[in-house]
Amino acid sequence: MKIRKRIEYLAKKYSGKKIIIFGVNDFLTKIFSNYDLSSLNIVAICDYSPDKKSFFGHDLISINGLNEFNFDAIFVISKDFYRAFDLIEKALLGTAKRNQIKIEPFIRKKVENQLLT
Image (tube, rainbow, N blue to C red; front, side, top):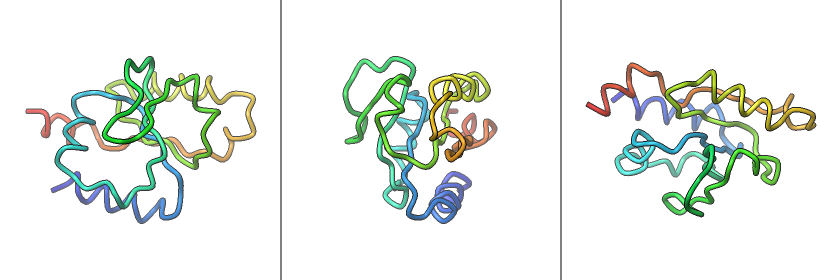
């Protein structure tokens, strides 16, 4: 399946890198429920305003808490990638981290829609 291949691709591309996943939604829940993400070094899950402290055993932080973590990349799982990208940029603006962090979509919208239907 395309999702498994994408996970394998990201794991290889970001081998040894610390990852934050941005966007808690039904799609992310299905990903964590149905796929092995242990090949990704996930240090936290980030959301706009989380109402819990953890998500599938990972720290769940607000976007304002990004600077508290040491990480190399953010994978965005949000229906509005560009809005999420802008918010992440603003949260990291003025920090030395911003120029070193990679931000990219976790999966393409077409694949997300296939999984949720």
